[in-house]
Image (cartoon, rainbow, N blue to C red; front, side, top):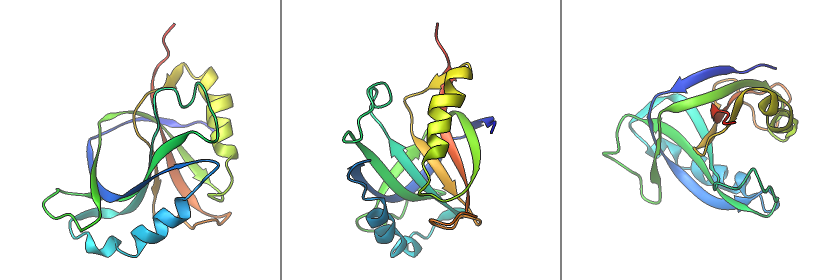
Length: 160
């Protein structure tokens, strides 16, 4: 599976976030909480949902399933004029990404093993320290083998 390389423009997002780890995964809790209230966000751009992750600098070089990171459930908005109570803003900065069109269950992590262990080492790129995200569009179906989503991995040209 080869990704397309794309430069995303800056995007404004509103959503909810939590800190979790792979071993203490609270993703379902985050999304249930967000989905109950997402219609309170009035200035949305499109209908896509965004699942975002913010990792620290050493997360991938010293991987440990107990290391925490920030996870977001969000939607894109035109501005930050109205922010629902208990929701937060997030700016997704402009940057270069490897975009993988993934079809399969969101519970199957083999796509990430492929990206980080197979594709990335041979790609001429390395992970950049920016937000990672998935766009959950109209063909996304949680935990369904026929689900489709885009996986966006922040990259930069590999340094020698």
